[in-house]
Image 1 (cartoon, one colour):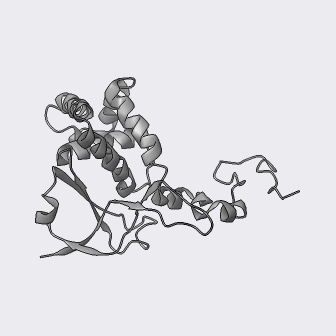
Image 2 (cartoon, rainbow, N blue to C red):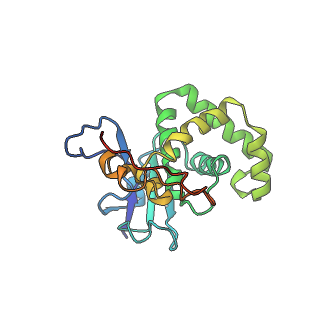
Image 3 (tube, rainbow, N blue to C red):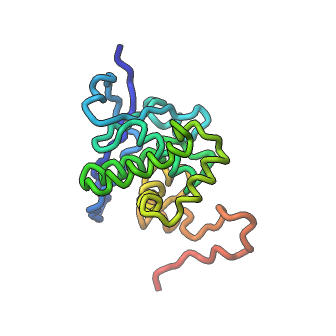
Length: 214
């Protein structure tokens, strides 16, 4: 049986008119690709999840099922790292598919650098030891305390420094948080770059005027 899923992969961003972008962006919803579990098992592990029916992405993606094939981390390590990231940067309504982008980048670092791979493996093992088996089965309060206790360690800093970029600098995060800059510099100028509506009760006039050419 073949299921339609959305593979989480890196994709070169299309060039905007008159502008050249040399950085990669994450494809939030590439075209439908029929894949089997056997095809994913070519890697070292795979994360699979389902976009929540209430998620803003549910109506945008061609399928609610997503998957991330890993080349440096195991499935369990990926699951733990995803939940660690959720503890460091908690957003209750942000879908796991976005947090999986952090795991994707951590996996790439682990594949490229044996030292990073060992550091992440040791961090996951340390968390599992606290649970006596599988750390992902810990209660939410225990997870929060466990991650807080790791603050400042190399493992924590690697996850945090990767997540602060990977979690927020992608089209899915832009859509979730309502960040309009992904539409292009010119378009964003007139689509809320100076809006503070995302803050609770911003002072009147705090957003400021839209600049014009003098």
